[in-house]
Amino acid sequence: MNIAIKTVLITGANRGIGRALVDEALKRGARRVYAAARSPFRVDDRRVTPLVLDVTDRVQIDQAAAAVESFDVLVNNADVADFDNLSEANAIGWHLAVNLFGPFNVTRAFLPHLTRANGAIVNNLSLAAIAPLPIVPAYSISKAAAANMTQSLRVYLKGRGVTVHGVFLGPIDTDMSKGFEVPKTSPAAAAQGIFDGLEKGEEDIFPDAGSQPMAEGWRAGPAKALELEFAVLVQPTAA
Image (tube, rainbow, N blue to C red; front, side):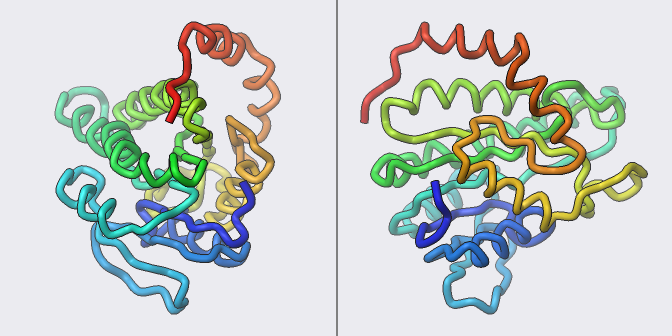
């Protein structure tokens, strides 16, 4: 999936990794970028079309799907990460609403577009999907669930010609990671790594300096082997 002359839709596109993905897609020659966010914002490039889209709002999701003519790549990037200690069930519910059901409902709404284009879905996950980060357990739970969803969608959509990619991000220097004092990768470098992985056809993308050391072990490890073993139990649904 080469980004050049393709159309890309990115959620959470107004800041952080999302904004960096918009910029990187334009650098790679994207024909059009739908930049989706809860609040409208402006990008001074005629190829960028802003979309008002709260991924927890089913009405806005349906309106956005109706407004988009066609596209090739969906990047489910919008998410939340709040500190918690598992003392409040509402924290888990909120993270699941945004980080799991958000990309699930967006994917379902835009799937007809992607099927027609033989397109690609990119779900931005986290290393916390593999091993929980105890200072953000609700976030970790939601990303683990989203990773499982990504693996399942990969199987069910194969017959429709739609590829599904999971991005296991390490620490990125965004507003979301403020106060977390560890080495961090810039959003621009992470965006470059995400699109590099997509263009190489990687199912599991480790795009940054914090996540790359995990790549070889994950791809050759028992969890990936089990995913592939289970996948043969399902017959992909044709378009």
